[in-house]
Image 1 (cartoon, helix red, strand yellow):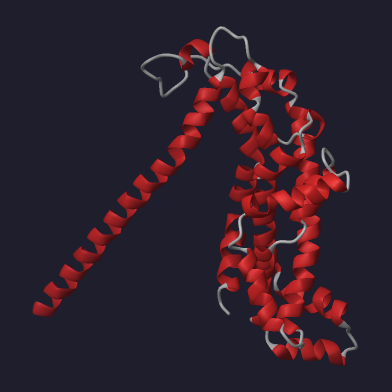
Image 2 (cartoon, helix red, strand yellow; image 1 turned 180 degrees about the vertical axis):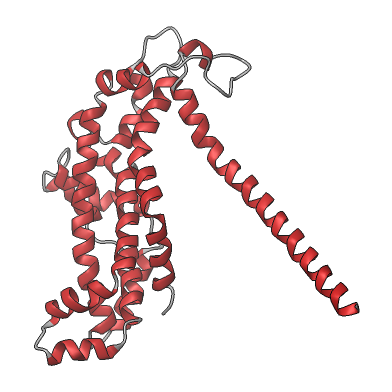
Length: 287
């Protein structure tokens, strides 16, 4: 009888703990999602409703013309194209250089390998704001200001990408690499036919992170691209208030519409591929 009471008490305790965890998770989720909801709701309001002293949680009327104004009057289509080209260039270069460097640090046998890897890790702690002056001078001397190459080249190598992929390569059993060598594969063959297929989850994850970082880049594009011809979305968002200058009221509703358009690709990618990202992070942390 006493044992039954103990079992019932444990079940009640676990049930109470489950309900508390659920409530906390719901509260945290609502807190994190509310800014996103507020941005979307504001983007659908009219200028007069946005300026009210007491804000409204739900738009009284839907104004999709805010998005049309941003896309046409603020030249957001051009900003989208520039951002796509810049992000694609950064993505291709970081995937290529990161994969080759990770293979060298994980599977290569040469003197100073660990020292060089620690130097690469040190680069993770150096912000762009510290190094942008010499980088900008070099790009200016080479005539790369207001060019796609100037936007892409300084971001062509990622210490984070190398670190994550190197850890993943180290977790792969050496026997697979030896089997590839026995079959006559060279270094590039081992990378392409052995390491990459066995590291798909991690490569997928760091590639998505690279895409996100490139899409959200602001500081360097602001410095190197002074002309509107090469302006990207993040910089274009900061210019929206100037774009609509002279209006009777502030254009926060249109600024929010531009923000929604800017983050839309990232939200879609995360919703579609979030489970692959979690798998990739867990595998990279195994070594």
